Structures are given as C-alpha cells and as structure tokens.
Length: 375
Ligand SMILES: Cc1ncc(COP(=O)(O)O)c(C=O)c1O
Image (cartoon, rainbow, N blue to C red):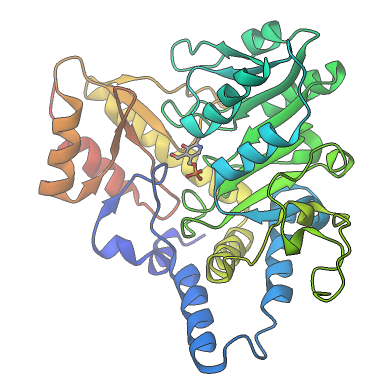
C-alpha cells in the first residue's frame, strides 16, 4: 500500500499535521466531491433524474457490509446521539430495570440513559481503571434486572478498545441487549455485529470515516425491530412511504421504520464515498496501519518522559493515544502545537490526546514527538 499516494485524498495534509481524528476529522476528497456532485446536480436539475433515494440505499448496503449486518437492519440518522436516544426511548422499561454503562463514556452515551431515571431505571457505571474499562467489572454489574449494556467500541478519552465479542456473548447468554457507540472505531477497526452479538449500533461519519458531520448510521438487529418502538415517526417510517394519498400506517419491515422524513442526501453520499475508500484499502490494512503509527507515537512519547494512559495491549489498542505530563500544562501544549507548529491534537479528560489516521506519515508522528516539551 502506497500510503504517501493516499495523501492526495486528504487535502488537509497541505495545511496541517492533523492528528485529531477522534474529534472532528477533515472530510476526504472523494466525500467532498460526492457532496459537490449532489449540489451541482440539484442546482441544475433538482431531484429529476437523480435517483437519489436508490443511491442512498446503495450507501446503506455498503455500510451494512462494513459492520457485518444486513441492509434491512441499517438506516441513516443525523448523529450518534440520535441513535442512542432511539434505543433508550424505544425500549419498554419497568421500574427497577437497569442499564450498565461506564463512567468514561462520551456524554452522548450517558444522558439518554440518565433521562430514563424518571421512569425508574437505574444507571450503573463501571469505573475506568488506568485507562481501561475492565470487562470483568462490566459483567459483574449485570444482574437479572439489567436490560442494556451501552458502551463505546473505543473510549474517546483513553482510546480503550472494548472486547465486544466477549461482552456480546455474555450479554446474549443473559438476555441483555448490547448497544454500541461505534463512532470511535467505525472505518478504522473491524466490527461485526453478527459475530460480536451487537444488538444496536450508532455512529456518525465525522470521525474515522472522514465524512461530514450530521450523516450517521444506525443498526438494529432484525429480530429486535418489533421490540424497539420508533420514537420519531413520519411519512418515511412506513411500508409505502411514496404512497402519499393513502394513509396506511404500517411500519416498514426494516430499520427504515426509524426514519422519519427526508434524508440528508449530500451527507449520505459523502458518507458513501468515504466508505468506498475504506473498502478500496481494506479495513484490516487500515487497522494495521493505525496501530503501527500509534505504536511509533507511544514509543516516542515514552522516550520523552510522557506517561501513556492508553492500554496498548493488542486487543485494547486503537487509533487514540492519551498521554500526560507531570510538569507541563496540557492546554498550553495543545495550543502551542497548533498555533506555532500546525500540529493538531486535543485535550480530553485532563489528558493530551493524539489520534492519527492512516494517511499521517511516520515523519508527522516524529514531528509531534519532537515538538513536545522535554521532561
Ligand atoms: C464516543 C463518542 N460518541 C459520540 C460522539 C459524538 O456524538 P454525535 O455523533 O451525536 O455528535 C463523540 C464525539 O466526540 C464520541 O467521542
């Protein structure tokens, strides 16, 4: 794989040494092209001869393939939060039920569950330990009243990767539903809803997929679609959405039942183009590349006296490297890197956080390390 040639797909490389894909990633060139093409067509021809919704269905099928599901288990949402909220609000709850999450989740995967407290639902939090969410603790917190485990595939502030296959298997054996916030891994680490026993998955495209904000993806296992009630219903939720003159309120026999109205078509086409790039390169190659780059980064940071928070065990590592300094102020470092050196990283939960992508170079990784203050 010629990773240098790939930099053409990422025009941001001309402007920044960008290593903050866990925040909001730059869109890749082909995603921007797809959105531009939509607008070029629309301003000249409107919706005519666009075949837009058929094209959205093709994007749906590619996304289903990327996560190991079927197209009728997948639909579009505006962001991760919407998907997680659809799950929290679409299930039927009884007083005394509980949900297991962790205390390191991004708020998108906390508030929808906390909002259920008013319905008598308890939210149990597994505590992060040394940048890890110990799976044994998650399993220990599950009891006969646990309905859902809601967890990120990769934690935003530590980069800890959840062993979803083990967790999914355990949840299935206990009749507990597994809901995954996959935004920090979709497009860079393999995920398989079937093999991992994932029941619900939500993600937006604006991180590792390098697609725009506001075009996300939602997976609901087929067998659960009768069980998870749609909570925002509109003309597109039904079996015959294009039959406007006859009211026939029957939910679609697919995840389209969670659609309400018109799609964010330019966003979805951009997302589709970004997913095509993932298939072109291959998810395993992308994952290996990201782990190689982050290994290099971790080695350099350690040499320079920084403490690595992220677990680098092979099954727990991801594209996110969280690290700390005992003597330097993190915010000052982050600002200095960005304004003086055009190197973009982030500060999250009191840690410095770098999240390079496949198109970053070894040189860029070294440059980040070299530019950080000494200990
Ligand atoms: C784990 C995780 N979930 C969700 C989000 C964002 O959610 P949304 O797509 O609703 O904006 C982020 C953004 O940082 C995140 O890190």
